[in-house]
Image (cartoon, rainbow, N blue to C red; front, side, top):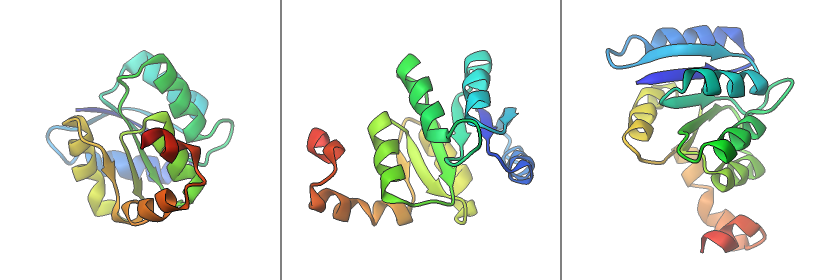
Length: 147
């Protein structure tokens, strides 16, 4: 599986590359540090999965993912972030991300990538536990359109 990693923290990128490439079936084919690079890398490398952070300089991961998914509905994008803010989760779902996991749960990264590659959607326990309360508030238009 070919992965592009995009995160504004260079240490995170290098660490992820090392962790991911310890797996026989994973190859990190590109690394970027902001949303515009994510778009460029996705378009030029056509990875199987884009693993991307949310908050970055120049362009956020959410904005980059939305741009990519608008151009390629088949893109598989997995957010890896430290933020479980409701608005980020809602936007990730709305734009069509295949997953949203929290960096602190690093042991879930490889299984999440494999699940997304296999066509599943993956949302970490921290995220899944928030979805019922987001739905029950009824204030978020995405949940009205998903129902």
